[in-house]
Length: 283
Image 1 (cartoon, helix red, strand yellow):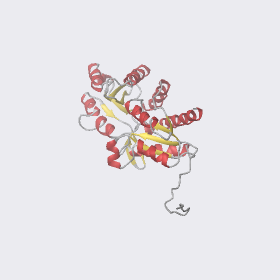
Image 2 (cartoon, rainbow, N blue to C red; image 1 turned 30 degrees about the horizontal axis):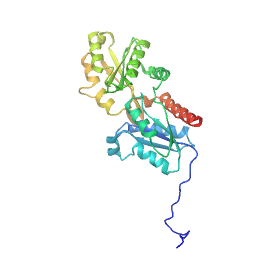
Image 3 (spheres, rainbow, N blue to C red; image 1 turned 60 degrees about the vertical axis):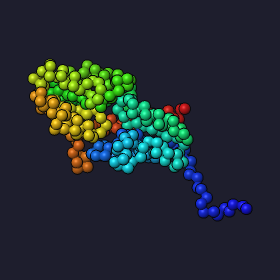
């Protein structure tokens, strides 16, 4: 018995897409941080109009709350849509454990040729660039102290610890009124706060500006940094500082200013995508 050409369930193969897809891998946000992700999505789509852009999320908790897909699920969707190549941009600040997890998921995915882009501060020249951008919001020495808030890692053996410590040292060496600490790991926030108290810096600097070195101003900023209780702000106010954190207005709502709020920072991520696309053409 011959198969008929008119069988309705005959599978239609997707068209093979020659250009690589762009996949943005982010932790995600179920609250106000989503506005920052939406802002970057708009900019990426403007710059890469000839590429289709997908998003995959690394936080299981966020995915369960929002119904958004994982990176692996998105890569499967990219392949099903006919793509054979993809650039994955990790929307991370430093190349730590989450970046390595993203890279492992992407590079081990069968059926796609994938190039993983670099993080915001993947190289020391990038660190210099980021500091120069953020410095536009530093209080001058005669007005106050600036406190840069890093995420950090709780894993002692994580090589990215050298990046966090190096960043803090570089910032302090370049600017006389800048300190940095991490929410997790080193540079340890408790130790830095103890140093601030020990050196009586509140007598020298009446104001203190917390500057989140995180892509979005989510729960870490709202609660851990600027919350009313057991936060950096409450502890620093207890030492005598007038504590502040810059805010921006986006679509009629007020948000704490995060790295995503700087046009140049978003541009740096666009450059990471551009570099990955060029490398994909070379190899």
